[in-house]
Length: 361
Image 1 (cartoon, rainbow, N blue to C red):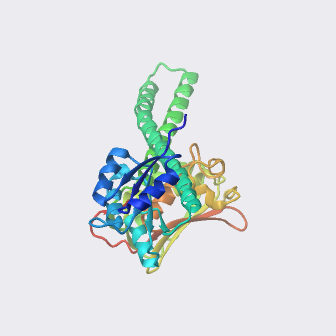
Image 2: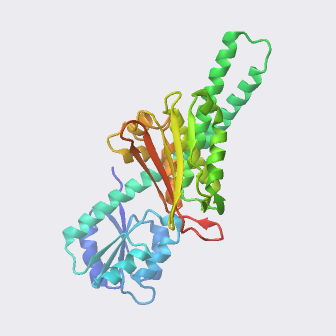
Image 3: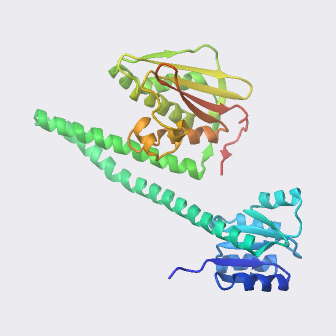
């Protein structure tokens, strides 16, 4: 038997409440509150899925109730539908700014109210499933790191043995390679989960040349293995404010992606531009290009096209880059070049001038 969804009706007009009970009482589990203070108590005890909230009430009005509910992280998924005879743009905007999901003007049609309730119940369910998925993904990644570290660590110890034949050495190399790949994918998954939930930005003023140089140095072995030429245009002494650890990770993943899909002996071009509002890192390769119907899909972490075309394993490197750019009020863009290859432009806003660490929601 399916559970009945919970609806809390908040209104100081007993006639309105009685009418709503007649409309909703058979299909939903309904509680009522006649004031803002009573509503906040009912939110905690009743845990509604949807709140039908009147704005004009004595004492604590609907906007205040809405703000108070949104301050509690435990009530994130509750959908709030404001009901009011007032319908001006300013009043609707105030409701949205207070944290309401929608606004219905009195007098309203019963069919419209029921349609909105159904829509927001579906959205609430979707939000909860997505959060559960993210939480399980993060938990699984945390739980996987410890055994993977053990596998890689003991394989490194075995590798030092002088009593191994050629086949045994090859097996250990397979273990190390596969273990390190899994460990790297686990770290990326954890980082993506942290980025999507919201993390702090620690901004500092950094010469952008130093970021590129460090990434080239870190990936030097892979560059040499494929005999790739890095053509790095260092003209201009650009300096910008950014979270150096996050941006370093993003540029490293973009360059690693370019190396992975570049033919041996090819060239990767790196340059950057800067104006009054943004700094752009641009990386171009001579690989097969982006084999995806919608190029923007490659920045979605788990699409089949993303996994096949421009990321190895879980296919989340580009999703990480996208989230890091967005946290810096920027974005990332991809395009196929006319002859061959792909170009990625990682753009950061230059308006982040706060001197203190910035908390992102």
